[in-house]
Amino acid sequence: MTPAQQQAKRTSINFGKVDKFFFLGGGQCLFDAVCHLKSRGFATIVITSDRHYHADVNMDRQRKPLFDALASVGIECLLVKQLDVDLKIFDGFDSTSLAVTPSAEWIFKESLIEKLSGRIVNIHGSHLPEMKGGGGLSWNLMMGVKECGATIHMIDSGIDTGDILLQQKYQLPESVSVLSEAMAIAQLRNSQLMISFLDKVVAGETFLRQSQETQNGSYWPRLRTDTHGFIDWTWSANEISLFCSAFSAPYKGASTFLDDKRVRIFKCREDTERRVFHPFQYGLVFRVGNGVAYIAAKGSALIVEEIKYETGVALDIQRLLGRRLHSPRVFLEAAIRQRVVFGKVSDLDEYRVNL
Image 1: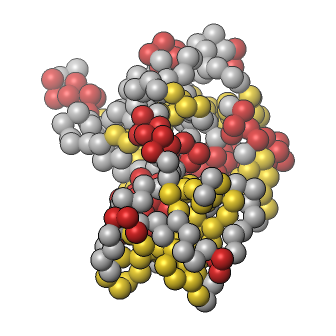
Image 2 (image 1 turned 180 degrees about the horizontal axis):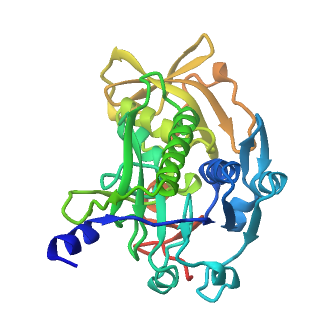
C-alpha cells in the first residue's frame, strides 16, 4: 500500500458488505431505522436498557412501548442491565456486521469497541463538535439557539469525540418555544439522517472521517428536571422564559416555590414592554387578568399562563395577585453543584457507567 493509500485509509472508511445490524440503545430513531432495514430484508438485533425497553415510540400513529412495537414487526430485542464483551449475542458479530447506538445510555469501553473491531457508530442528536454531551435540545432552547443538527460519528472511548462521518444542520421555526415541538422536529431529522446513512452503508459508499480534535467544540452535561430546573429570580425575564422552555413538556416544568409549596411554571413568555423593577420586586405577581399573571423580573415582566402544584393541580391565576414566587438558595446551589449519572444525581464531575 502506497503512503497516499495509507493516508486515504486513515481519513476515510468503507464498511464493506454489511448484512447484519446490531442496535444498542432505544428511542424513535432506533425504531424507525430497524423498521427501514427490515423492509429491505436485513437482519437486525436490538440490545436495550430498561428505560428504553418500556419507553413509548410512535408506530402507525399509535404510541407503544419499544419492546411491544419491535415484537409486532418481528424484530428481536434483548434487555440487558450492563453491556459486556462476553455477552453471547456479540458472538454473532463479524466483518459483515455493524453496530449502531441511537440514544444509548452507556459509555463504551475500549474492550467492547475492540470486540466489535471498531465497527460501531453513534447518532448524536446535535451538531458536533459544538454540542457534545447530554441535555440536547434543552440547552439549545435555554440559550435561545434555533440552529440544531444531528451527527453520525464513530464510537471511541470518549464522550461524543469519535470521527464524524455524516451530519446535517437545520433551523427550528421561530414559533417553536416549547421542548415538545422542538423534539418532534428533531426526531424526524434524526431518523432521516440515520436512514440516509444506513442506505449509504448498504450501497457500499465510502465516508470521509472528519476528526474533531482540530475543531473548537463544547460539552454540555445531562440535565435532570427535578434537580436542575429551579428558576433563579435574579435572572432577566428573557432568561427565565428560555429556562422554562428548556424544561417544558414532555418534562415536568421549571420549578420555584409559592409560600412553602413547590410549583411548576408552564406557558410563560417575556413581556414586550420594557420595565424597570427593583430587585426586591422580582418574583412578585403585580397584575392578573385574561387568564395570565404578570410577574416582576429583571428588565421586563414574565407573563405566565399556567402554574401547577407538584400534584398537577393548576393554581387559580386570579388569586396570585400580590404573592411572591421564590426559589430557596439551597435548591439553586444544588442545581449548580450536582450532575446526573444516567437518571441519578451525583456530585461527580462526570457521569460514568460500568460496562
